[in-house]
Image (cartoon, helix red, strand yellow):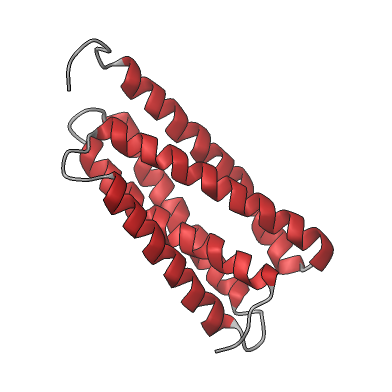
Length: 164
């Protein structure tokens, strides 16, 4: 398998996180559907944007000569790790708030990874990566704010004195 540069590895990571975000949106939607239709609509939009992000990432990966397969293999590993984290965090007792709290962590991580990719690319000056980051980072920042607001909304609806 081809060795990846730090930039290519970071591209793989954001690709894998985008792949995982699509699945996470579906899982949390199921936890939320009986509680808040507007939050489900937000999650569906986020999942669609995650799918588009993954698609754009894969396209950019194809521009790294001889590296697309290695980048996508690494992306699938990242997706697998994220799925394992999700299944650990969102066990059979998980509710909508648990789901949104998990997404808050996940989206914060995505914002961080995209920001690191942007910083690395400031030196690499890869135009395709630059265009991708310019498109994706604002979306990831909005996703983080959306799930944080969803977490707060769901938290406000719970009785803090009720036993669990």
